[in-house]
Length: 411
Image 1 (tube, one colour):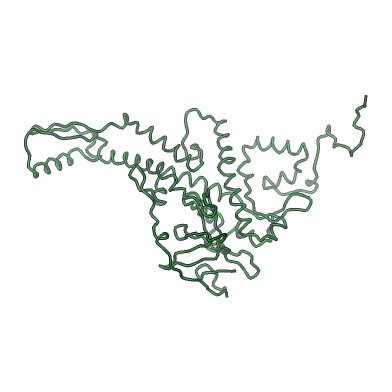
Image 2 (tube, one colour; image 1 turned 45 degrees about the vertical axis):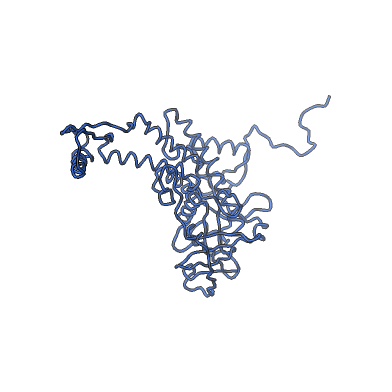
């Protein structure tokens, strides 16, 4: 079934618009996140304002959006070639819809996956069932339910709730507990994000009040409510704020000032803020070095291994998750059986330095695993005649046919 909304389809589309308005409970209306134990309400909006959680999401989103995403066709004799003629190729590689580039769409998808645990896109197809466009939807506008083995979707649009056919929704899931809906990343990390926001607010409020220690003004003389209010306002005007930082405090009328709060250094304020960076990174599976948090023990060599670990342990699982979902939801069973599949090309990120690449290419060439034209293609260079031949060093001979004399003697 090709299900389309008028705001998702091209102007020359002749498809009829069919949707059903349904009654729904309030599960789609409550979008605010829960309050954390730190007293800070953590939502997708406030998580974006926390520098470390936004940095984690941005690192993953950049890793997903910046590398090429292509459709391949397997060869009968092994290997594969880019299937540029396939309708899905330009959708994933160039532009999924007239309003977004492939980079922008994948970046948005990744942000939804990291923070909300789910990403939804409306699929529009031609009469043959080929994917024409992918239109992103906000996760907060979609509700998912499972009835038996059937998954159903509901979308809130212009005050109404609309049922959506599952075959016209590209639903990308993060880590899932029930198998049909991803776990909300912000809700899972709300305590870590909440404490990070709370410590940031604590520091900001401290500096806005002159970075002075709050305390108590006491006197043995009885004061009327008007006098108490006048003392409070007078003290605040003279001591609070950045303009009054480090000013000498003068009291009169028997007033005594007694500090009551613990100073930031004794409360290990900076240590807490640094630990929260690591704690939030743990939730999102990102190495702290990727969000700019480094320590003194990291060297140039160890940093290189950390970047490689980020690709292997953080990005590679995301690539596999998205590739398999694209294959299942955007390709037919016949196309998958014919060897058509999608793939992120992460070789560019793994290039390393010129010396590392040269050593790698030489090794692959010496064992005839790559020919010169394949190496030149990796470096975006044009092929040349004869470069498609595999070559071996002069002192290396290919193995002979089975049963050939290998120069050994049987005792």
